[in-house]
Length: 77
Image (cartoon, rainbow, N blue to C red; front, side, top):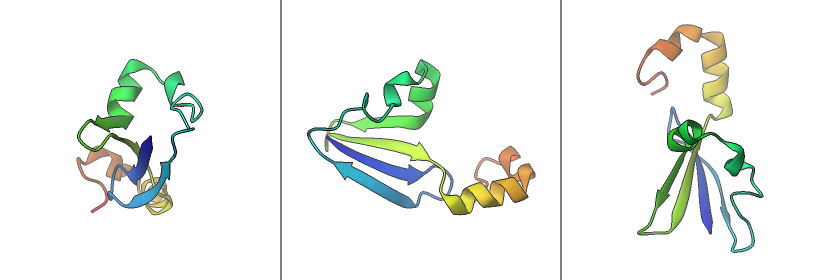
Protein backbone atom coordinates (compact mmCIF):
# COMPACT_ATOMS: atom_id res chain seq x y z
CA UNK A 1 0.00 0.00 0.00
CA UNK A 2 1.26 3.44 -0.91
CA UNK A 3 -0.09 6.39 1.10
CA UNK A 4 0.78 9.99 0.24
CA UNK A 5 0.10 12.92 2.57
CA UNK A 6 -0.22 16.42 1.15
CA UNK A 7 -1.49 19.80 2.32
CA UNK A 8 -5.08 20.50 1.33
CA UNK A 9 -4.34 24.22 0.95
CA UNK A 10 -0.91 24.67 -0.64
CA UNK A 11 -0.66 21.13 -2.09
CA UNK A 12 2.81 20.62 -0.59
CA UNK A 13 4.01 17.04 -0.32
CA UNK A 14 4.28 16.18 3.37
CA UNK A 15 5.37 12.56 3.29
CA UNK A 16 4.49 9.06 2.22
CA UNK A 17 4.31 5.54 3.52
CA UNK A 18 5.10 2.66 1.21
CA UNK A 19 4.52 -0.61 2.95
CA UNK A 20 2.49 -3.72 2.44
CA UNK A 21 2.32 -4.22 6.21
CA UNK A 22 0.53 -0.98 7.10
CA UNK A 23 -3.23 -0.61 6.90
CA UNK A 24 -5.69 2.25 7.05
CA UNK A 25 -6.86 0.80 10.36
CA UNK A 26 -3.34 1.06 11.83
CA UNK A 27 -3.20 4.72 10.77
CA UNK A 28 -6.53 5.43 12.44
CA UNK A 29 -8.21 6.41 9.19
CA UNK A 30 -11.07 3.94 9.59
CA UNK A 31 -12.38 5.81 12.64
CA UNK A 32 -13.47 8.67 10.36
CA UNK A 33 -17.09 9.26 9.39
CA UNK A 34 -18.22 8.74 5.78
CA UNK A 35 -18.21 12.52 5.25
CA UNK A 36 -14.68 12.87 6.67
CA UNK A 37 -13.45 9.99 4.52
CA UNK A 38 -14.85 11.54 1.34
CA UNK A 39 -13.34 14.91 2.28
CA UNK A 40 -9.90 13.67 3.38
CA UNK A 41 -9.06 10.46 1.53
CA UNK A 42 -8.75 9.82 -2.22
CA UNK A 43 -7.86 6.43 -3.66
CA UNK A 44 -6.54 6.13 -7.22
CA UNK A 45 -6.87 2.66 -8.72
CA UNK A 46 -4.47 3.35 -11.59
CA UNK A 47 -1.45 3.71 -9.29
CA UNK A 48 -3.01 2.03 -6.22
CA UNK A 49 -2.18 5.04 -4.09
CA UNK A 50 -4.17 6.51 -1.22
CA UNK A 51 -3.91 10.30 -0.96
CA UNK A 52 -4.60 11.89 2.42
CA UNK A 53 -5.33 15.61 2.67
CA UNK A 54 -3.98 17.29 5.79
CA UNK A 55 -2.68 20.76 6.70
CA UNK A 56 1.02 21.65 6.77
CA UNK A 57 2.54 23.72 9.57
CA UNK A 58 2.87 26.80 7.37
CA UNK A 59 -0.81 26.81 6.39
CA UNK A 60 -1.93 25.98 9.92
CA UNK A 61 -0.01 29.00 11.25
CA UNK A 62 -1.33 31.27 8.50
CA UNK A 63 -4.92 30.19 9.15
CA UNK A 64 -4.56 30.65 12.91
CA UNK A 65 -3.16 34.15 12.43
CA UNK A 66 -5.75 35.08 9.77
CA UNK A 67 -9.05 33.26 10.45
CA UNK A 68 -10.72 35.15 7.60
CA UNK A 69 -8.74 32.95 5.20
CA UNK A 70 -11.15 30.11 6.01
CA UNK A 71 -13.83 32.03 4.11
CA UNK A 72 -12.01 31.85 0.76
CA UNK A 73 -11.98 28.90 -1.64
CA UNK A 74 -8.20 28.80 -1.83
CA UNK A 75 -6.85 30.45 1.33
CA UNK A 76 -3.18 29.72 0.78
CA UNK A 77 -1.73 29.99 -2.70
